[in-house]
Length: 492
Image (cartoon, rainbow, N blue to C red; front, side, top):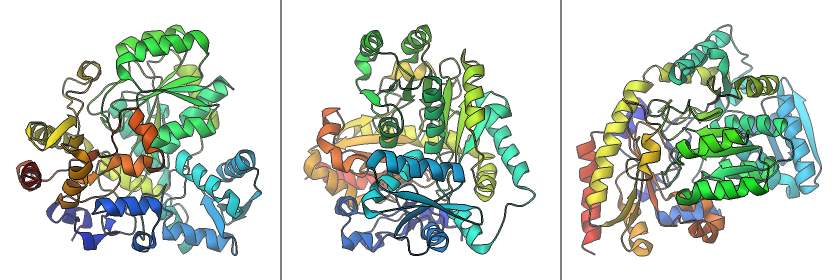
């Protein structure tokens, strides 16, 4: 039985299912965290939880096959990770030496390149792996361990994937640059704008997904966050009067608060100052929104809604042909680009993308159905969803046939006590990631920002938020399961 489809009928949410891969395959990118305390202990790396986790989101949890590659290439090196090219391995080794002054070296064998460092350099090694997303996938590791090389069909599959993405984005296939992860696409965008304007900082418009900002802080010339969407125009203009900027980054909509920067106001300002806009559309997807009148570069994750299966990683950077900076930025991106998306991952993505539009249409319908009911329930304090959160800004880029997506964040009433209570009882698969055809829930703030909770809450992001990625289950049946828990919570 298809393990992905199995989760549509039998979600993984019971305490005893802690650590189970979601879906239950060797290449799964999520894993079960059924209870609030499991999430806390995952972040605190307790033995009870750590020994249960055999796989996880690949930028955060090094897959067993990937770890085995490191052992084979660099035997005896305790702190080592493989990279998909010599260029990226050298960049990582340089980052370790520059960032924490620890020794690092690159060890190569049969086309695989491992960076080894000391115990003091391990955190910086992991930072590069996590924030840049330039990683070796589990399929690439599996192939290397088996001695498999890319086959004759690989180039055709990569070309087909580029053509499908070009159709979604209204650009030429050679405007699409594939990457091993969505964060690697962000990294490519950051490298392009810092090459264009060395030493200038970048700015994040609106509260972002954690690694988007960490990438700018640690691997760019520095990043500044303007988190208040209501004051974005004023804050940006004030900043531009004091600083030159390499670029502005934003998410349409943001994750987890699902508000959007008003690009009708922002784009003219940035173009007047010759500052590129890098806009991430992962949550909405190109099915729902059109950023071609605003963005200069669009980094996106193929791992989420475009794949839908939760068992493959991939990303793409789109050079928007309608941008006034198109020729300049594309030339930089092209010079820096390496084709690092592994062919077997591309094959899965190419296949899944063929059904993406029809799946996304259903995700939209199901997401709206659940969001409206959550918003009306007495156990819920607040719901964040693009239809209501800075809705005019979202509507300005929403396609005529597009919807509001399937990501919902909500805050229970009496959140400190009822957030964990509700999460523990939700009969939905619970783990990191989003965009799968099976619904996923997680206490996002804890997972993404556990070590900086006071700062995050100062930005208006509660530690008790529950984020839902609504899948393709029957929405009425899904709501009935959720409603039973929420009704009990309302009576407590």
